[in-house]
Length: 376
Image (cartoon, rainbow, N blue to C red; front, side, top):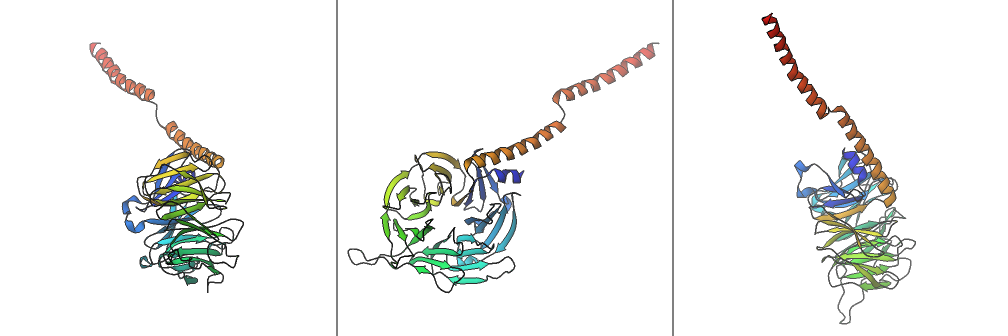
């Protein structure tokens, strides 16, 4: 039954309570996948990523430094491995290389590469202190980007981990000649280019171009007055969606740096954002315990699901809605067939009543026969 439920899910969310939640938008249902008898804050989910291209394995990074492997086909956790120490801080990112190696990064800035065969990392580098996010280049999977508080954007080639292939230069001083500090909260690689877009805790959006000699942003934009916490690129790649600590989400045009529109309905800080890779949809979650799906075309709310816990991260399946509906119908049909078999093996109420009536009539007939024999 659990494997059927996991196959229905197209959205996965990690919560503060350590529960991995799967959501079926087609059936409008949410399922919890965890051992609820041993829940603790040490199992808080801070990072999610797919473990294979077929999206049959889900990697879950917890606060206690463990990475669990969840099978979407079996509907259960199949493996747990320790990939860090709680003293290193929470996971700020997980990634999988083309050779199935696991990449982890903690808040302390230690970035490690793990192989299946060894319990020790094969590669370890220092990305600086107070790292807030680590992201992988979806095209060149050997490259990752890191950044944090007073820790500018850095791009690393894991095949040459001695030094970063790009590191951002400090921003120009403001009009009072005061230093403008770095505070990178999230980043993403812009497709079909070498550019990287970042959002900061000073409500700024920056675009860097490592192919140019300039190490400062080639585009600067601002949104709102509160720290930005998460971003995601649309499927087209020319629009970035950002969210802040006050539950405000906006779409910015990366060509001109202008706000194209805002998404409404949130009541708490945004912690997770992801645009669908092929459809004009964006999913968001955060402190208000709701999962929301908005359309990027008309900016209307498509789905809203209450998940009972404060949410940290989100992961979407790459399948489109039609494929998701087909899989959901297939899985629901399997569940229905199992239920039908169960009902077929049960006795009908009418049959039970008839059998009871016969059982009651038999003693009466026997007593009548005995009376007749006695009279004779």
